[in-house]
Length: 176
Image (tube, rainbow, N blue to C red; front, side):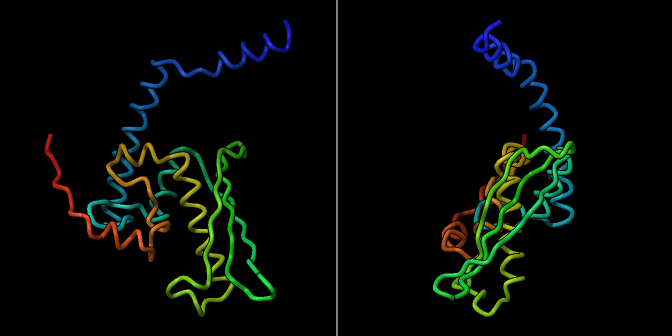
């Protein structure tokens, strides 16, 4: 068997069949019900206008249901000797230690309310943002099934987008 034939065979083995996809959706819907129960009881969301956005704790809860955890790290951002903030990286790791996804994010001194914060505080917020964003990349589809916005609250908190979304009219829920 040639390398090309081996690659095609391996690729064909990785295709998700409709039956497998349906099974994955069914499992995700069950997990979404559990997630919603926890999020609502614990208040792990923030309503912004018409949408509910999960806080990082909600994303972490969902990630545990898939056997994921995050490993984060941060570094200072300095320009011309002036400390500007922190950049953080988050890797989503499965139970076998395999990296399944990741994201980066920032927290800067020029953000409202961050002017006087220490590096540790800015790095912590950057890590929180990176972690929620990394989980979002893998699990937003389950969050949508649970009825929440796929955008983590930490990504919009204190931004112009939060103000814009806050002006949206809340949607009325349709009973089924």
